[in-house]
Length: 543
Picture 1 (tube, rainbow, N blue to C red):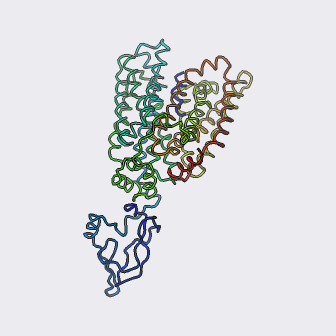
Picture 2: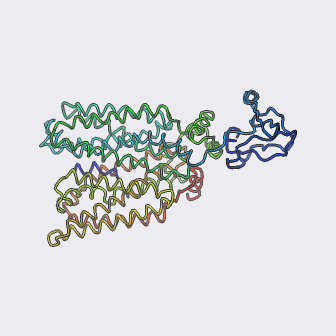
Picture 3: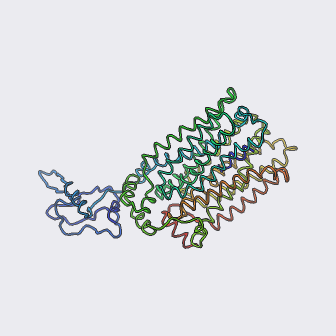
């Protein structure tokens, strides 16, 4: 039961930076001083440089004099300051960065935000190796209900955390909210590490749940809003990669338990470090420009865009102008006709993620490894974590090349086929000598396929398909769906297995994978390479 629940979650003016000056006739030997290597484009609504001679001391104008075949260049910075103070637009602005330069600026902010996702995975994975040891120390070794509560309390907290995270992010900003959720993560980890009784442990697990529930919502939202459309897929996949890495490290951190049963105290204490790092490093990364523009903080938004992308973004200005000053959406507004398509896609994908077998595969993985001759449960857990991590790495490389819909389709097809293999192996385990190894192969194949699409893409898509005005509330609804069905399936899975048997359950999961493929092919919008504004307009046309 613990394995079931723990792994389920794997389950106009300043925008001129994009304007390169047009070539103008040389007048009085004065020409525009530009870097020829930068791309040229014209931003609509910006007055281009006139072809008439320009004053020699306007910004961007170099006085070039030929002396003995040599050039000297002079630019007046003082007049630039005067132009800015007077409100006039400079003729040239900062040039846009190329894709590699932008990646070097955006990636650190994404990695810092992903610290919260790492904590998410770590707290989900830590209970797997530590549960029996902490239960013995806390005097609940024979109390199945209390042990189950230690596992599931984090899911209760996560449901509440994901429910309120959207509103907090819309009110205080993505950056400040990500800083704030470091507090329950750190405090909860500390309480768990020094828990003298089960009550303290439950409080600590609840606080950790609040933090990871909020992070499950906030991290993909923040990453989507600061990432360029060309690399939003690969950067968005870092969220799932951090979750998988956290789970894997939690399992590895439990290795000393074999010789030191009290090591679980240190395991929980380790989790304070990423929470503290999250708080301090989030204080120095930029706020989401999308949120700043919605709040009318244009100067701050342009500063954030310059820090992230090298220059303000004209597309973001026009998109933010559409809903600037509008109130944030209420929860009931999410089911209105204008938002019904988006909310259906977001919540259904999370429902299907939980209904296609991830709980069952994780629950039976240890038994399958035992049947194949692998008696070390920790080694089996590490193998499952590592193979899921590999699938996520492949997904990160393919998301911006293949697209979301093809990867999701491939993922569900592979998961369905793997479920059929596992069902056949379980049915024939008494008569087929290779049943154990085949079941292990099916398990590993399933985890690769899950990491390829069904794991990372629902969270990524939910951060892309909603307009900024409803994004916070809508993503809260999506992730509440995730946590609720995670908890419900975790509680009802074993009784169903006992009633109908393991092979029948896996055949049911294969059928759900087929349903998932049909849903993805007919309902899910492809978002690869599109700006968030373009995605929202296409979604509005589908409603």
